[in-house]
Length: 477
Image (cartoon, rainbow, N blue to C red; front, top):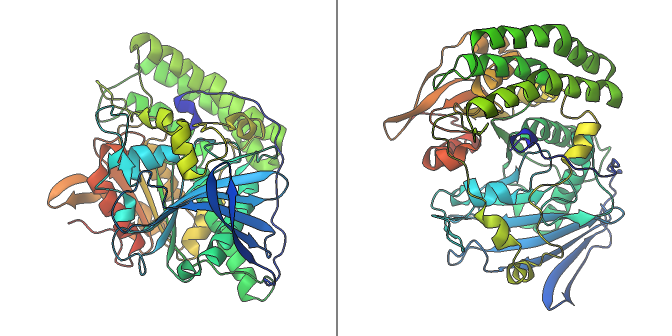
């Protein structure tokens, strides 16, 4: 979820990391290592100078007979240890595609999405132990959950990352080491799925992969080409210039309930036009830390904080991720579970679980205010299937804003896509939302869903996920 849901602010020192050119692997090593009663499978990847250290079949979360899982670390750089948790597909894992999932935030652990939305297990009725999730994304694909930036989830280290751009090379390094360690997945179709601040992560990570693929094809880089076929982003935060204005419009006019009056609505629009928009334009023009942090501070001070003040006063307990009354939100039961020592030992985790960390570094670097429309456009232009889908009860990254984002993507089909009408999207004959598609771009509005769509509409979300990974695309059933 985007950081604004909790308005969590922390501080840390941040430093960016850039991937170095990769030379052919010459001295990869595999061995077993016992540490603190845990037996790790270790793979040293000489090309990226990284080290995979993982536990096989911990027995945690995925308990379907015959379905393998791996959990552990990619150690790369100076004291940087990125956590991953991999689950085989429940059906046909040897042919199923590979999908990497990144939680948003910034600084939310991917276990949030894993346990509350699309992973192999979930917590039902506040139980203290998880049970199998029949609508898990690994029902169809091999799923790789990654905790980034360093410091969130089970990731740890002294070196940290404070921008989306700086995170991309580390993610690419992890994928390269993963492919070398598990070569059976090298030539599979690959997808990236993410949510919320993933509107930054998804376009940047995908465009970085595409750039690396070009370098590989030209012979400038010796590495494994990643067959990126799909990018799925739910309730994404892509572009503050577009989405801050629609935040105001959504509160005043949505299908659930009007939350601000006309006077406040007009006042907020004036603040946006006279104060926020000029600051965002300057961020786009200069791109500096100071300029983009000032833009973030502008829309927080002029729009978001005043809105929160009114909503908290008029609607006590108001939840930004679901504007309905009563609202519904994903449970946090999984946090205590992952902080149990026996669970951590089984998984091979070396630090205590942290559900959220590192948001402040991204904020202070100006990352939140930066637009990722250029990267998103590049991914669509490259022919990758892109699905932008949004629960229509969410304020944080509401569907009005993400629709305008989709309509603003620069590609050959822009005008035709913008002018297309939304049509019903059904699951077994029951309407779950509306959508429009043209070639490899789809936008979807999902009914009766808040910020974390698979939590609210699990069966429909699994259908959307499967269709996103298939060449046939999004089709009502």
